[in-house]
Amino acid sequence: MGSKVFLPRRHYFEVNDQPWFPQTLREKVQDYLTLGWINRLPILQPTSPAALVSRVLSTVLGPRVSDYVYVDFASGAGGPTPYIESHLNQELRDAGKEDVKFVLTDISPHVSAWTAIAKKSQNINYIAQSVDATNAPSADTLLKDVPGVQGKKIMRLFSLSFHHFDDDLAAKVLENTIETADGFCIFELQSRHLTSFVLVSLLWPLAMLITPFYFWNSPWHLFFTYLVPIVPFIWVYDGYISCLRTRTPEEVEALLRSRSSTEKLAGWKFISGQTRHTWPIGWLYWIICYNNE
Image (cartoon, rainbow, N blue to C red):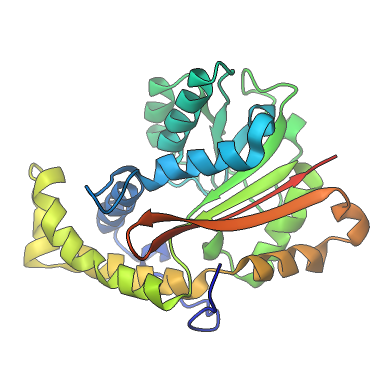
């Protein structure tokens, strides 16, 4: 991740993950997170982070980008995946290539939200049953009822979600991925660099500025942003914790090798990098690992 990280990794709790946190407030926080993925600030952001993810996928994977079906683990209510799909497939169409498919999964499926998303794009499907990322079945079993993905390789997608796993779970997720998939992608909008903590600190005033434009017709958004500012507080607090939880590529690779033998990893290619999404200090951090055989 470039320069030396600011702090050692700590797996403190995020409020939005807790079962006792009210669902109504959880949804409001998720709304802001989604906005952070799909919108861009004039001048400071040449493109949205979701569009940046699609660009990284097409650039790093090159011609093989169409070889995969992208299975999103820990999809939540959908997150940035519909927007990544839209941007990536538009790039492929412009290049005269076939569309790729995306599949939403989660240990706690959000079927109603996913149904609405799938109706808007023929390239997005979902698994209605619970899918545990540490113990996912083989592709033949997992995707047997998903149309248009037969014969495709499996690329697991973790968008702003891999840092939610503690080290033991993360190692199990990676081990299962090596056994049942052909690659994985990890995308994070934060890191343990000092600049990331500074950027997160700016989310509170950003919420104050953008709420009237996006949520003017939502009294609860206005109430919990201005009168009782729980939502911007959680957005910033959880943002700090996300920074502390995020792993460097070296730490992810070490977890990968802790559970998988050298023989199993033979032929796997591990690539990482960072691309600026917000001038001057906002970066998209990415890891792409795939079986090159």
